[in-house]
Length: 462
Ligand code: HEM
Image 1 (cartoon, rainbow, N blue to C red):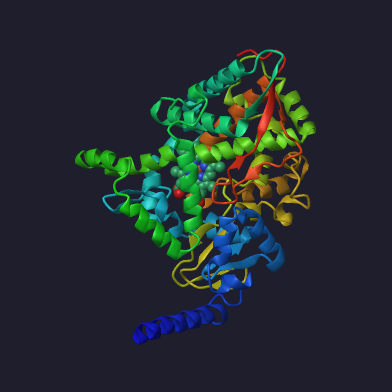
Image 2 (image 1 turned 30 degrees about the vertical axis):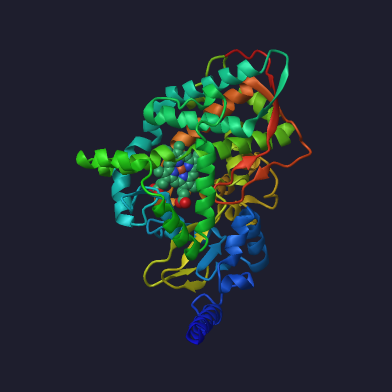
């Protein structure tokens, strides 16, 4: 018993000494931040646990400046220079262990995909193989499929909204049903049936939300990450195992793995963006009026993408929604290379987790102006050209550099098409404007609590 107490006491002393060293002598000791963050990950864990990371991360930058230590080995940056160095340049840093759980597991080992891989060479070889499928020109072939999904959404809602009546709908759910069905249509030419049934099928949306929340939370500390890995491994084979067994025998595993990632990517962040547009436009009737006036110039038929991308106010509303409501609420984590790096005047040792949180950079006054908390699409139209270019360069909603979203062109087409048809067909109001929506301030910043009152717009024909 005596020796057990001695061992526990010894471990305690070692941990305390290590914490003191990390705080006062480690290579990051000069960087300001919340006091606890310099020796343990509690600050990050609590911020995510309370679904409050975007707000706390922004507040930390207001208090401590452009470079903030938010964990013993994690630094959050807020400047455009840091964004460029860490994420945007050709030599952008590799992803951190945060991304490990975003690989499916097969026979006890992670199946690396384009999103999850930390290996720069493997990533670049994957991207070379499939990148051509996602260029602006290439995704035009998907326009009819996206049109099909948008008109299915419109038909479903039309069936729920009788002429001259107003109906209350949970738009948080309905846009996710659209996003999931669109994912099916684009990937396997088949809608999954979410819109048809008008609800989550087999708990897929709920399951995906849970997985994203867990990934965001457990990744805040290596110990939690390890515990999650143990639990997930103990659960045994998942959905991907039988697929991989077939693929392996056909020498296709290298194709199946990136496909798996693209099939899983995009529905939740697309839904987050559409919700942001709907919510902020509903809160700003003058914006809605201008948007409707612009859309009124379109003919009665579904407008082609090439035409709607020329509508300046629609473009400004989408950019402003992407800015004010970052899809991801955490620092997009990267790791400094061997030899370390100089970022924003600090020497950051090799192996440090560094990055930028979209919420933080999108509220940088030097880029987006003094009124960053205000939803003002006009900022994308009225400012001098070089300021607008600078805002576009620093809009981080789709990431930046080599690890930027490969699906951005598809996502933009989905957004433009959905928003155009939605406002052409419906008038919308928040059902309870006195209430704020609820935002999950974790990794993907999902919003709920946005019931809306829908009425058919005049001349709406589907
Ligand atoms: C509005 C919709 C979307 C948004 C806001 C969005 C946002 C993002 C962001 C921010 C990243 C970088 C994440 C990070 O570095 O941590 C990313 C990566 C990625 N996205 Fe999207 N995405 C959207 C839709 C899509 C769609 C439709 C697809 C499917 C084709 C897709 C596929 C991917 C892939 C494969 C990556 C990994 C790219 C790489 O590491 O090279 N995304 N996305």
